[in-house]
Amino acid sequence: MKSIGTLALVGPALVLLASTATGAPSVSGNDVTIAPMALNSMSNPPTKIMNAIVLDIMGRPVGAVRKVATEVSGKPIKVAIELLGSHQIIEMDSSNLSYDEADNVVTASFDQSQIVQMAGME
Image 1 (cartoon, rainbow, N blue to C red):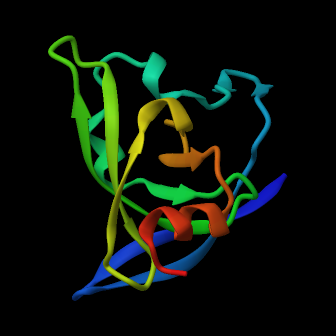
Image 2: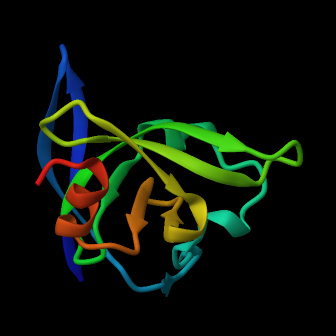
């Protein structure tokens, strides 16, 4: 089980609130948890993804989804992510992201330092 955080918009600032989620699929009775899937393999991602937190590959919160660009077919191609604490927006190719719809969490295939480099915030 890995611990994650959730983001809430409070005025212009992003605030980190504590919560937990499981990272492994589980089945208990009728409750089925589906493993995260590659975002670029989805068709028409749910609108709630616009409020999803974004974690780095180590499970650390790095930002929040602000926009998802899709092909005409609805397949995601790019995701705009607002970085935690900076209000800076970076775009990431959807092939570098996975999405856990149950927990509304997007995970990048990069660590926090690589994401900071993408933003030019070194």
